[in-house]
Image (cartoon, rainbow, N blue to C red; front, side, top):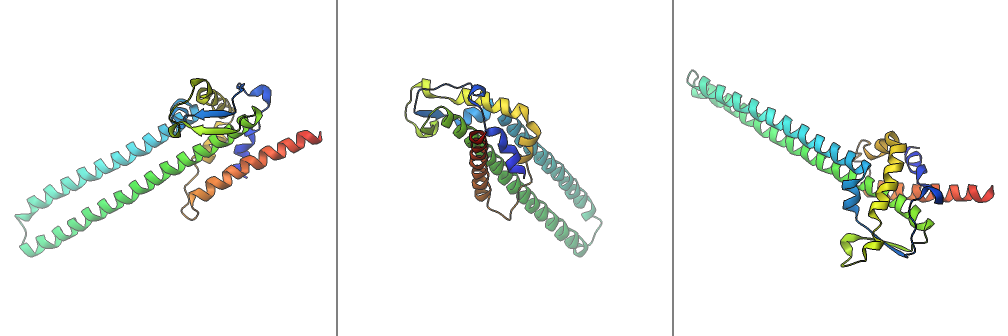
Length: 213
């Protein structure tokens, strides 16, 4: 199963975890991790590529419509008002359909971006929980919800280091789950919850196997 494969690397041995903490609480800046990690960089690059592709398509269609409109204006002088009205109506309908199609594609792009971010966060949650458990941490707080904290309990850079190491080991697997086709049949919140559950199941399974050996 794809989700199981991608989250198997979340079982990290203590010697593989470059974080040693005496604090029971960690602060994590998710935006920092998105902007500074290899995986986050790949996500942002694909978001930008999708935006630029749709922008280029829109600009090309706009130029084509403007050209057709100019041509229609020239032809108007050689046509009866009835014939021109027919072509003008067809052109107007084409413009409206083009605009409607663009809005649909833009909505799909924005939804896809949102789902990519949710999947990224679910991976981050799995890694953070694993490392926190190994270090005896009782709580992880998002920096956006904290008024002030001592910089010594901000483990964002350390988590970036771990995330980068895991991503570099298995980039294709992580990319496959991050950028899998977006399905409209299942709420993405359910997919994220299922992914998070898979993380815990894999960790517990690996811990049980270690204990039995």
